[in-house]
Image 1 (cartoon, helix red, strand yellow):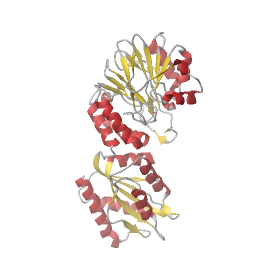
Image 2: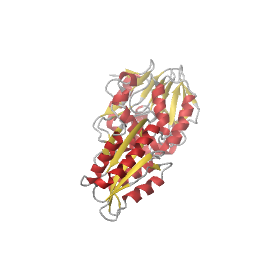
Image 3: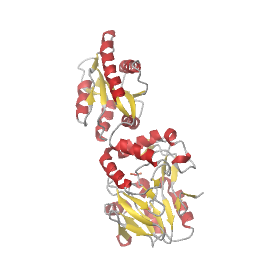
Image 4: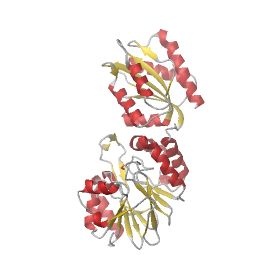
Length: 400
Ligand code: FEO
């Protein structure tokens, strides 16, 4: 059934609950939605297409929404195939439709579709407008949020910002299209944070630039390409994006990420957690990096200001899953965290040095003292040292 998000805009997106991994990389047990929108005015416009996995449903909904009318414009905000896979199908069905896209999208459109649409394309510079009748669309370039060609679309008539990937989240939609119709903070926030951190996290500086552009607009509704649409409490969403894009923690919290082959490093990590808790800290979460997907641990590191990393030595380096986590932290620009370290090595321990070196390649990471070195297992004699580390980490939480 077709649903409207404003008097003139139909939702023509769809949700995929069968796809195991977004970008064939990130587990999405709650699925994902690919949002797209048809705007009916004197002229008609389709804002983005969809992933091939929901292509048939998407195409049928576009035709339903058009109700027999021709499509005048296809606005391409983003060329990533989760939104662009159906472009050829739409343009074949609507041979008179004009394509509206950013300059950086032009070569991508040709490369992805294998077709030359230059004769029916309008290239939109930042700030260009397109009048559809009552609605005039303004195109707001948003490079690197999440690819270089991305642009958002602002409809001043209804004060809607079609925000491309920005403000999106993993998680399928279940009838309710709006964030205020679901318990977003309980149902979607962990996936929204994980989506942001892993998909857009590297580009915080560019997200900050977009937030400044958005602040100049009078916005009543934010319609992203994934997840619920926002029409209430936009300040809560913008606050989260502001924190995430400055790599600032959301909460006074500790995240302990450990690797452990036979349980000895885990035991030390659990003792550290208990010693931190004994100091009155309540927001502590632990993750085994061999069990929990790295995208979830990264999201938790975006949430918390205090981190502990605990790793065995493996082939003279870090345990592979811990190496993957640290590589990801660096790639996504994680910074300004207090980090406690526990290393383990039965002989030729190297994990502590390797973790310290990796953290030194990130910005403003404060390594708490002392680093605790295990020789195979935690001993009674080391409890004082571990407690001293717990004290430093607890203090960093309370002072955050
Ligand atoms: Fe949802 Fe960057 O595509």
